[in-house]
Length: 486
Image (cartoon, rainbow, N blue to C red; front, side, top):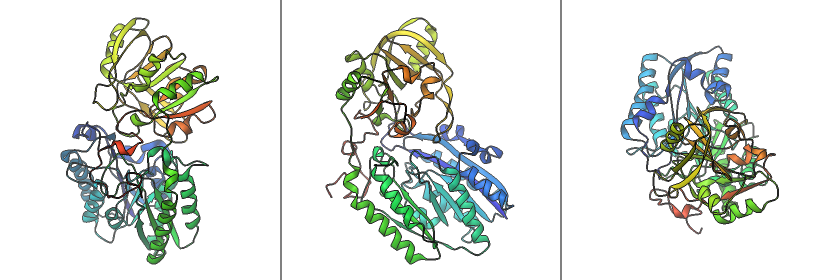
């Protein structure tokens, strides 16, 4: 038994002004053994490889395209990535199965459903009889075409996501059942007319998505069910099927799959009002943080999250910190490579006046002038220790400018800010600060659980705004909640 393993872990914010170009794809593509070692035991690929080798299968790596998240993909980039995977499959010779780690939110300028396009292309190479399995991120905007082209799609069940390894193992287990002719996956897809804000997709007690996931998990206890994946969707990546979706896979029970998919869909729809966002204005959030007796108060800069494909140079909270003369405050982070280099040239301990942020587009606030002392110059590499998003992060050259009451972290590239090590790696101890600003849509809630005295989600401006009415949707199906009053 020979199985090909690779992936296309590409996420897009189609509202972003920066195109996702070929150079990002070429720099972010793994080949050979590095594919099989990806994630150091934390990826769906590593889970599948573990299961495959446990069955005595030969694992053949094909390219894993993992450039990150940005704007709409150029035609050149998507076609290049697809051809890398197809060429490797052709040269691999006979394979008895394929496993791909997908994100499920890739959109190109010429293809609305890049993940489905890739699955169809893979299917054209290996044929209709070879099992093609794929894992999905919990934010996948899964389409009927993706379900049609794959033998089985399996999504993660946590948010923030930390169960990729079990998903990979599950895929290997089901594929083994197919090889032994015990299992015949049959899938059904359903979609409520909902496109939830990312903030409300947090899976934790008391949150609506956790309730929906519990219903799906209980239905999945039926021994005829191989998997029920309830995916929250990713609204910044716009296509017709953007939004919440459910994929049910049974063991040769197509009618049951359709019935259960409809049940989960209808339950989610019945809970739609609970998915309305809950945010505080920038002015009021900063004032509340200042007036809170104990810290750290964690402020979520939801609209410029490093996990949502925005430029990471939003300045709304920084401007308000300065306006209200906040003390013991930290801005994490503002991506501004030019300002970083100015600070590096000045050197540690030197006073600088910099104009930071707001340089990529007009949606994330205007540039802000800061004056202070360069306290840290760092290579930007640090290790996250949470059970989700664990691993090594590279912010590029990073500096900390101490402006008196507010410390400003400037990075060379955007990065999701969600846990204490983002700050500790730079010599900033969060428990010794009053206010911590994080560019994150929900991960900061889990990352600072037990550490923050209070968490406030802030209605900042940006292309990942949780007020979806502010975004110029053009392709999504209508009517859809909450864009329409249904």
